Amino acid sequence: MVYVFLADGFEIIEAMAPIDMLRRAKVGVTTVGIDKELITSSCGITVKADITSAEFKFTDVEAIVIPGGMPGVINLEKSGIVQAAIDEAVECGALICAICAGPSILGHKGLLKGKNAICYPGFEEALEGAVISSDHVVTDGKYITAKGAGVAVEFGLEIVKELVGEAEAEAVRSAIQCR
Image 1: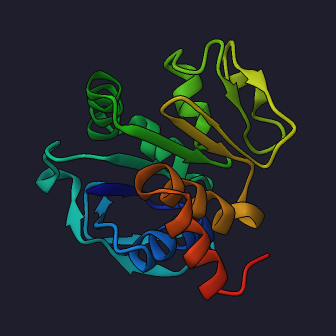
Image 2: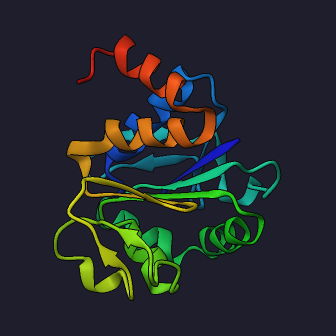
């Protein structure tokens, strides 16, 4: 199962595009609303999370996804549930995926030291010890990071590739007419 964490102020495209790509690839995805079920994005769209953070249990986790957006990233970083989920993902070797300002949470935890990574311009200093890439989407071991909303589909397809293979990612890419 892939868990996508949503907090008030999240970037809608950075959460929904990966969810869409994963579900097209028949990968199980559950959205987790931090502290509540109805979460409002940075652009004012409210979505209903599948579960709340109080209901989240770290079982059968293949990957976690941290979308960007402000103040969404700040709200995610303040969440003890998100912090614990990241720690558990590291411990069990699950994929940890973050886009835009989201990688800053990983950087603050020291998880990107020596790893190739990318983030939204201006957040590079928060990626403590990372090797900042010029690519828009970067995979290094169990970490996938991406630059921002404009590459959210690519980010989602990279997660699909890492979880179920390049053939499935290319099938989804072709089905949605993505270059």
